[in-house]
Image 1: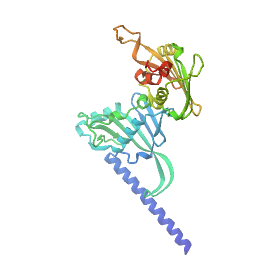
Image 2: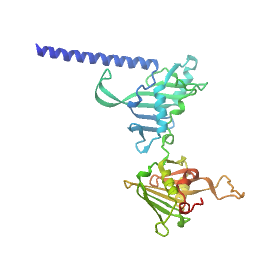
Image 3: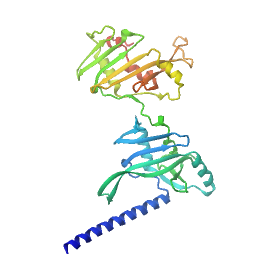
Image 4: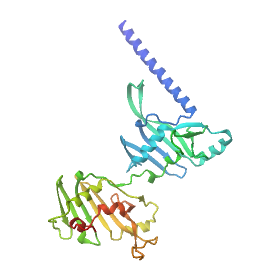
Length: 353
């Protein structure tokens, strides 16, 4: 009798699970027919793939909460991911595309759209969001993002497997969301070069090949212990402006480049990196990792003049930088790099150079 009762309980539980699964599938089908684009639980999103009609594609993968990788090799831009996930969560359907516009919208979606695939962490058994068993990654949403509506207040979108395009918008946002979906790698690049807390820096070496007397290394031995060594004489400075040295070290918390120079002619790039660097920065952290950045002056091609009205040979605002172990050439700004590459004389003297 007890055995039969146990079997009956198991049968009832399995029946309930089957009913729940059927209802969930039916609910998903109805939502698809109604144009359900939004992702309710963006925290469960593990991967986003986007591809356009020009053979551009990006893969954004979550390593940990708030940390994403781009194409499995580069750090993705957090601000861009946060905005994209917020958009995906808030998407709402304004209306199906009117019949008179149907053919033209479908044609544009077929020739000029971005395919979006969203993967989430799901559970094979999920009872009332209470009992969750057997987690796995699942492709949960695929849709195509077209261009903006004529009034720029919506975006044409189409769910994969459907033939009904919709006008989609984000409630509370005046504009169109199409621009937030891009398959261009550089749009998702994190532009950080340095992101190191002062407590994590062991040494900071700054070389000026054109002014070797200004080159130095800052060695940090503890929270209140550091020294400055001239690279030309290999001698420790007997005195220096501690406030200025600490301020320089603090500047490495967040340093970013302006743009990736992926479209530059390879011959020109090769020519640049084989000239003498303007500066060489080597930051060694407390784990022994060394981040080396070489900067190069940029020829003045736009006609900049100095304060006396003389044409200058080099760009006064920007220069090149070789980053990521010498693999990438990027554009940086003096405005950003000047405060973290002060010459030795600035650290010794009270008069600013």
